Amino acid sequence: MIAIVDYGMGNLRSVQKGFEKAGYLAEITDDPKVIARAPGVVLPGVGAFKDCFDGLVARGLDAPVKAAAQDGRPFLGICVGLQLLFEYGEEGAGSPGLGVLPGRVTRFPEAKATGLKVPHMGWNRLMPAAGRNLTLFDGISANPYAYFVHSYYAVPTDDAVVLAWCHYGIDFPAMVGRDNLFAVQFHPEKSQADGILMLRNFGKLTEQPAYCRR
Image 1 (cartoon, rainbow, N blue to C red):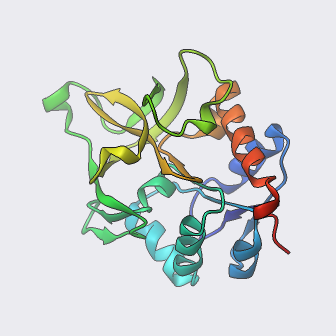
Image 2 (cartoon, rainbow, N blue to C red):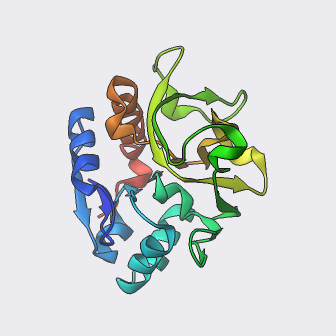
């Protein structure tokens, strides 16, 4: 069973339904014990960076979620769930993140600089980074698009963690990760066939015997 972390923020049910379409059961939970034994963990998120981080801390989920992102199990961050993996978010008064990946989260340039509205909302093309771990892209279309809704984007200290890019006035990371840790700025559950296939590819990772805990 895949654990979807419930910290009071995020489109939990739509992510759960996305996994159902992909053929995998996913449990919405705020129980650290469930998160600790799950063969795969998903950290979704919608809203402000600080509110999301504070929600994790208030429920005592920051430490177990960080451990899940670092212990080698399949882990998937979605939207703000990607951003929280970094060290610091600049939104509002600013907030620390989980610090799993080095880097920060900053706001898109204003329209006067790029001619583009903020937030970045709608469909945009994904550009996979050559030579990286593209397990989640197995079988997707040759020219994939995904659905985005965000005003802030990650700026990793090391671009080696970027698995795919997107362009919106500037190039920004659409997917980051290392080993079995993956995080996407877009919403795969809203990205039609390619997005559901990415969730299915993540689900396949959780079927490996090494991650099936009791």
